[in-house]
Image: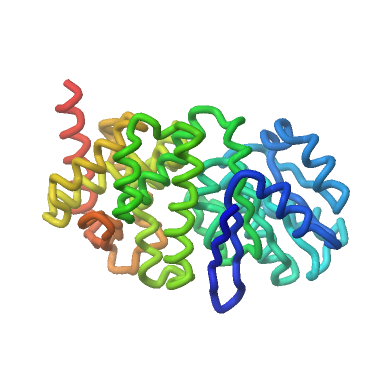
Length: 355
């Protein structure tokens, strides 16, 4: 078992990572506490016995429908209503048992109810384990914009146990690999490890090892910049364009769209002379091992949603994060028309490659 701390002005978030941590840590965390568990229908179906035996005796369980469609105001209101009717107090604890959707909406509910109750994240997907459960970002989608309503609210405890990976479908593994390869664009050591294991990216042994590396990188960044005023923006590599595609096309997983967005943004970085072509090829090779990148004929329409991205600072500019060299990324701001033109240029280039 490995432990990582995120020290912020508001709280120290302790992350427990490794095989068997669920059995070792969860009983200690729950001892003497009244809890409110939030999970989704998929997790409840797969781990219903665990929930009934380990969590339900300590309090109520609220199950939401699985999928991004649950990250909305109506679902959030239902959770808050159930929390109120269950008699939850400020000294009580919300346990988020699930993937990114559960972690996001449960974290937001915990931050809002009585202006904040204790929060424990138990991520069950690869994406949630390597990224979304760590760092305190909570959100719901609103008016067709992804993650636009949310808070920064650190969990007191995050329990990352690879036992959940055994029940994940291949698509969920690809989704998590999207975030892992993103970290390869931010950390030279993670990139090196990815390139040494290109034939084993989905193996359980590799995923157990790389998960800790990704969490360590994010913990260091969040400790230095909790509220995304500077350095933490780099963690959004691939996300500006990826989120826009995700909202418009809705056919792939979040992590797959992160990789697709990263591909298009790498094209922009090379075109603008920010990222050397040789380095871009290394990252593009990893991306292509996980996802087939579409040549979107209407990519400019999809990318209109990028105007609502939270990293934008005004003036009509689009903010993207681009790799510069191994271990370094930078923010690039583009006018909306220039951004759209470059995205379409990438789409045409992809179409020509596929002919």
